[in-house]
Amino acid sequence: MKTALLLMAHGSREPEANADLHHVAAMLRQRGAYPLVEVSFLELADPAIPQAGAHCVQQGAQRVIMLPYFLSAGVHVRRDLKGLREELAARFPHVDFRLAEPLGRHPLLVEIVETRASAALSF
Image (cartoon, rainbow, N blue to C red; front, top):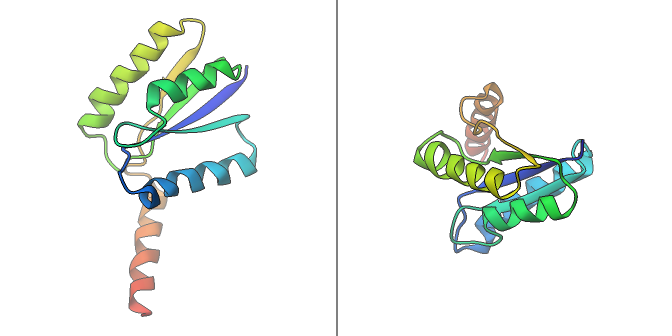
C-alpha cells in the first residue's frame, strides 16, 4: 500500500517560518521511509491542507498519514485538523486518511529543549 506522509503546520506570512517545515520534509524524503512526503499549511501559506491531501492521492497514495507539526493538541489539532481529515476521507473514500498525534509530549522533545538551553549558554 503506497503511503504518503502529509506534514501539516499552522503556516505563516513569513516564508522563513514556513521553510522549517520544508526542511523537515526534505530530510524525511532523504530517509526514504515514505514514498511521498508533502508539506501543507492550515492557513496563511500554501499549499493548503486539502490541496496537499488531494495531491497525495493524485500521486497514487492509498494511505495518507496526516502529521500535525504542532507542539500541542489544541483547537487546531483536535477540531480543525480532525475536520480536514474527515473532509478528505469523504472526498476520497478509497484512501485511508489517518491523523497522527502532534509532536506534543514526545520524550525526545525534552532532549531538544535541553540542547537549545545549553546552546544559549555558549553565546
